[in-house]
Image (spheres, rainbow, N blue to C red):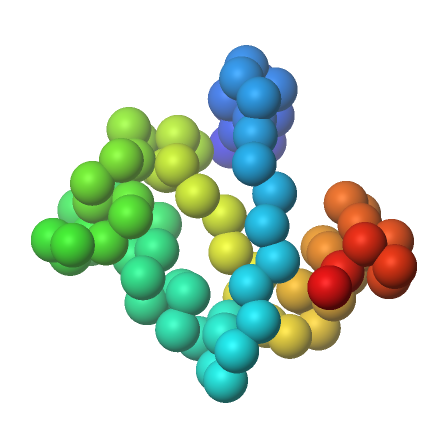
Length: 81
């Protein structure tokens, strides 16, 4: 799982964004859709753009704790508006 995921993630440029709002993590996870291709529902980002299990087109944190850690990988506090 890990090697194909890394290969995919470094194959093209990526866009990193920080979303803010009430229940942002939960709401974005619903919009993203399931990781497993067979569980993806119509209208979700992964159903529309995902190519497979690893090439699922989008990542979203699974909790506020994870979100804080992942945001710190890409942004300094002064960059978050």
